[in-house]
Every structure is written in structure tokens, then in C-alpha cells.
Length: 104
Image (cartoon, rainbow, N blue to C red; front, side, top):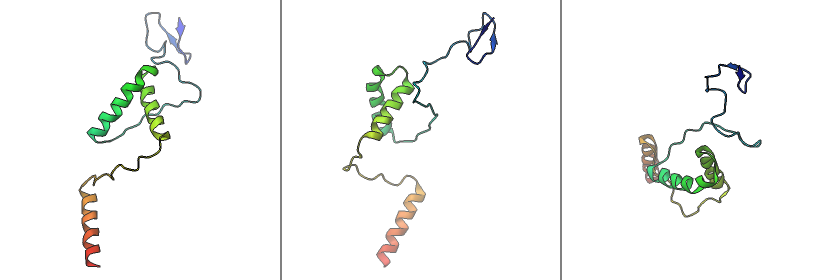
């Protein structure tokens, strides 16, 4: 009877748990689940960057990590406009601030 990486016994016909699904990460790397919300245009740009990085990465998760690391190291773009209001509460706050400033 074979054992998996955690020492659990497996039957000869049992494939699951005997081999890792992905190659092991280098020692200084850490894997984390991340949920991100962006506009459709930003997702299209991010996906294009991932496609460019994919040939040098062994998995898609590593390609995502490479792109994010590259974007973190890059200096911030100065000419990019500030994003608009994200929801109705932001819009209401901005409207109220404009009204208050016009009164003062």
C-alpha cells in the first residue's frame, strides 16, 4: 500500500492524494486566495498581461503572480485619471460636498 505526502495510506487504484496537482512552489513563494473586483476594461488589460507572462510561468496562478509583482514594482502612472464614483453612496457624498462648498 502506498502513502501520500501526508503519510496517509492509499489503495493501489486510488490516484487522488498520491501526487500533487501542481509543481511545488519555490521556498520564498507563498500562495494565497485573492478576490479582486475591477472594471471590464481593466480585466481585459490584466488578462492580456497574463497571456504575455504565461509562456514563462508553469501555471496560470504563477502567471497572475508574476503580473501582479511586476505591477507592484512599476512606478505609478501619473497621467491616469482618478476613478469615478463606485456606487451611489460615493456619488451622494460628492454631491453633498459640492453643495456645501458652493454655500460657503
